[in-house]
Image (tube, rainbow, N blue to C red):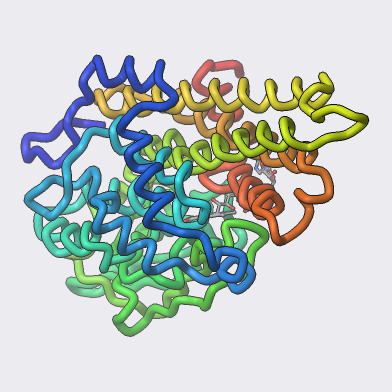
Length: 400
Ligand SMILES: Cc1cc2nc3c(=O)[nH]c(=O)nc-3n(C[C@H](O)[C@H](O)[C@H](O)COP(=O)(O)OP(=O)(O)OC[C@H]3O[C@@H](n4cnc5c(N)ncnc54)[C@H](O)[C@@H]3O)c2cc1C
């Protein structure tokens, strides 16, 4: 992350904070948000909302009131301007305290991709127009690169933005987009110069209340069902030049820069949730009796829980390291890819291991365990699959 002279980007994290965040899994910044979330974001109707794919709007606004949506945004735009490590600890706390993992994922996605892009690449006018609403929780943003035929191969996109006087005219169909059905504004990547391939991609702010753009309804998915998810269809949408994000042709550089924060840190809420899941597996191992003893007395069960803890701790430390690098303005491409890879695999393994510990109870909708498993699996895909992270790591190592 570059530190700019307009003071728009988050301050450098204090070295003492970085060390503390690495060594203390119960860091007070994280635990304060976890306690607040447990108290203020009750999950009473979560089974129903999960069933119906209902977004927890009240919870979103409560998070905004708590300053979470604007954590990284400077105070003059209504945010708190905290550093990246603090924001990461807060997201982890949100995941730990709030059982609605879909809410946490939606919020992390908005902060780490949409808001991050506006902070780094937005003009003063774009920032002044959007960031106060983002901080207040009234402006919801989406970040749209994927299309039905181009997921991992994102730069093969077919969406176009053709110059017409002072406007660009956008056509295309963006698919599988977090928050699309709820979004007021979307950052849309489209080709302004198809002949230039990846270097012909630009980014635009698309306002979903204007003609030429349609949001799909909520598209059903296996997990993270309380995160609104769907498509954004552009059919002759006119974006004035002032709505282009960054220079023409800068799409790939905007995307790769923002992906460092997204990849590296988006698992903060799900790692927070995994901590809760491990705690609940330990409780179950202690209390469930079989063959005249608590099941935790069987090494098969205790080692399973030990494995969950090891995977979680390694992923958490890698994520905090990545947050520190990003916050310091250092290159974090390799560490963000490692963070995404180990966190997504850890979260999926932990979800499945917890289901084994809970037995049939873990398979019932009345308990959180089965939802936690479903919520865990999306992470293997979003922000780039594990294969794609390994490709990136191997490329950076110049293996071939
Ligand atoms: C919950 C969720 C939220 C999402 N949110 C957003 C969002 O907000 N914005 C957005 O733009 N997109 C979003 N996506 C889309 C996501 O980024 C893509 O689904 C992802 O990049 C994978 O693309 P794909 O689904 O087309 O899979 P494909 O690219 O078709 O991949 C299928 C399989 O082939 C493998 N594969 C493909 N290419 C290679 C290769 N070169 N080397 C090795 N293996 C390869 C993959 O690893 C995978 O196993 C989201 C997806 C999910 C599930």
